[in-house]
Length: 174
Image 1 (cartoon, helix red, strand yellow):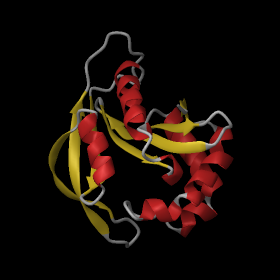
Image 2 (cartoon, rainbow, N blue to C red; image 1 turned 30 degrees about the vertical axis):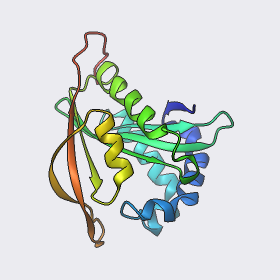
Image 3 (cartoon, helix red, strand yellow; image 1 turned 180 degrees about the horizontal axis):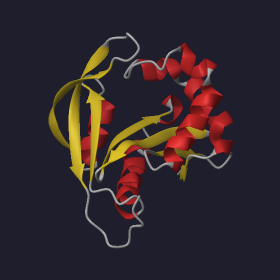
Image 4 (cartoon, rainbow, N blue to C red; image 1 turned 90 degrees about the vertical axis):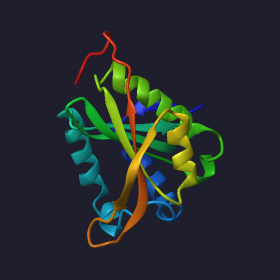
């Protein structure tokens, strides 16, 4: 099982390879990141690390023993004890239960390490795999929304979810 690691500067090459290798696969279920994402990846990676250092987001990668990134699990827009969950798994790593395991690990970290009390998530209507992961990990549907749709591109019809987290007294907060 890959290790869930908090995003670090040295993850950049493996993360870029992951995003490039899976671009078409991801675009089938989520809005494409666009060419600028890849052209300016190093600056974007540095910006993510700065957001993480400021406590605005918590970024994670699933890393195989050899250092290959096979997934991402992120908590973004952290505020008032809540954050939005996003995750993606490499095409060649699907069907192994990695997304479910990774989301369960993030649920624990969100409550114990980051002091969060709830998470929000969204999945495209036609993204049955992500919707199943959210349901299996205790997320409850809350409504419908248009997901993505940045930079002039159209969004996708989606379902929004919420998950309350157990309060713990061992967390370090954030």
